[in-house]
Length: 294
Picture (tube, one colour):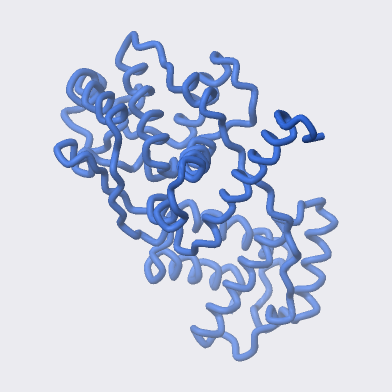
């Protein structure tokens, strides 16, 4: 069977059987299309373990970083595992491939002062109230940007001060929201959201200037613009607020299990990265302020 046909089958399996998000599936698709191009759509039984090793050499020559190469190999191994499970092949040539060791880098976070600057949005119109509500909600809950833009009105319960969201693997979680976030959500929903609608209705909470669901790219541009205006000179992304939410919780005494639940991490080892951030901050404070710190 042609490689291109099997890749389509695999992506359909990720969507229907595994319930993966569109963003995750798109990532697999990009990796496997590169593999397809290298193999010129051979039949799957014509691709040997030697061919796989040649492909990894090709990735290295393309000057991809270790993290990108590791992700490509991981996508390839998942694809071949699917082929074995589905009985398209009997033996798995990707078993001999090893993932390179990737040095874990600490995620970017904002200081508490920088967060306050970012959240200090001048409220002048519909869009500024929307931006304020989005930023407050992200920092209050640690939502992923995909979870934020996919929130619907029915997911917000202001009487109980909670939101419901569906994270990776379509897992539902309930997250409390604080007073600041609730205040600006109420102002946006009841005072400004209605005038942003272009059609009779839209089920999504946060709307763009077309009256439709806010996009990832749209929110990314908003947060970058506000950060620039506030003089926050960091490599900032929507995920930075999620990282800041977690590291600030840990700093003030929240336990890792609670943070794991709030973030929707399936494995606590993913959450443990924030202990390294806190330790780095402690070390820096010691060096800066202790008389014999340096």
